[in-house]
Image (cartoon, rainbow, N blue to C red; front, side):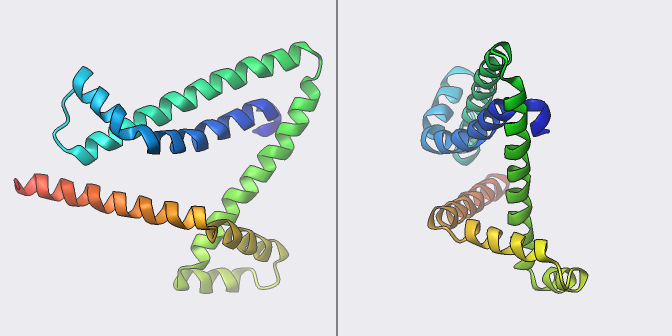
Length: 168
């Protein structure tokens, strides 16, 4: 997909998602208040916060995609479109590699699946490289803290929804 989109669109698409998550994490409460006062009053505060988070994420992502599309067209008009596509191919390949590295790391942490994975690819160089890269990414302090925070938020939402259903 990177060779079709080009480097600029790929970078701005990824920036939109990652930046959107960070921006949405910071301003989800304010967005929830805006949604509740302007559009619809959501009784469950956790659900309102999630709606605010999702709204900011989507808006930020779309803005980044539009900016990337505009810049990509400018590059094509300048005659450097082929470099944009080559860079997009390399960047897209690296992005897919990192996604697979994280997935392999997650699968390797589950004992049952790790045994199957080890039997399937005993002498694989790529599998070990994916495991090591995934381990490096997932064991960073920022990643560990973010995963713990996301898990706590998800548990809060489930708890609030259960309490709402029980009528408490």
